[in-house]
Amino acid sequence: MALNLTTRLEDQIKREEKARAWDESALHVSDLWYADEGCKRQLWLRLQNAEKRHPTMGELLMWRSGRRVQHDTAELLTKDFGPGSGWTLVEEVPCKIEEVTGFADMVLRCYTSPEVVVVEHKTQRGFAFSKMEGEGPRSQHVIQLRGYLMALNADYGILLYRDRDGSNRPLEYIVYRGDNDVKQALHQIRLVRDMAEPPQELDAVISTHKPKKGVEYELSQGELGDKTTYVQNPWQCEYCPYYKISCQGALGRWREGVV
Image: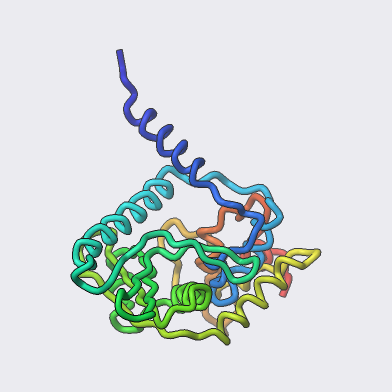
C-alpha cells in the first residue's frame, strides 16, 4: 500500500499554518513596511478580507524554514545569554502601540540595568546577502524593528540576518530609535485602513532590459525614446496573493491605459 508521504507532509504543514493564522483584519507592527516599499492597495485588500490565492507549498515550506532558523538562532544565543552573562533572552515577545499589535522576535534584557535590546531576525537568500553588504539592511526591516523599539521602549535594536541557503555567515546591523518615522508610518497605514475605496495600484516598471524568464511583461514602443521597451509589474505584484484575483496589478492598470 502506498503511504503517500508527500501528501501527508503537505497536509500536516497546512494544518500547522492554519493553526498559526493571525487576525488579517487588524493592523500589526509588521504592516509598517506598507508605508515604505509596500503596496498600500494590498494592505487595504487584506484588511477587507478580499479574495486571494492560497499560499503555495513552496511558500509554506519557506516560512516554516524561516521560523525554524529563527528558533535555532534563539536557542544558540540563549546558551550564551544566561545568568552569568548579565542578560536574559526571550522569544516572541508581544507588544503594541495603541491598537497596532505585534510580536518581537527576541528581546534581550539586562539583569544589572534597565537596558532593553530588541532583535529582529530575518532570513534571506545568498544574493540578498551580497546586496546588503554593499547597501545595508532593507528600509522595510528597519521601520519594522523601530516599531518594536517604540512599542517596548527599548534602547536600540539589532537586525540579525541568516542565509536560508547556508552559504553566508550571519550579518547584523544596529538600529536606533526612530519614533517620528514610526509615527508617520502608523499614520499612513491607519489612513489606508480607513479608506472607503482601495488605493491605486502601483506604477508599472518600464525599462529597456528584457525581464527574466517567467516574468509577465508587455512590449511597448515610444516609452523611452525609440528603443523597444518592456513593461512589467513591480516585484510587489509578483509576490502578491491578491494579484489577478482581487487586483489587476500594475501591468493590468497599464494595459487599460490608466496613468
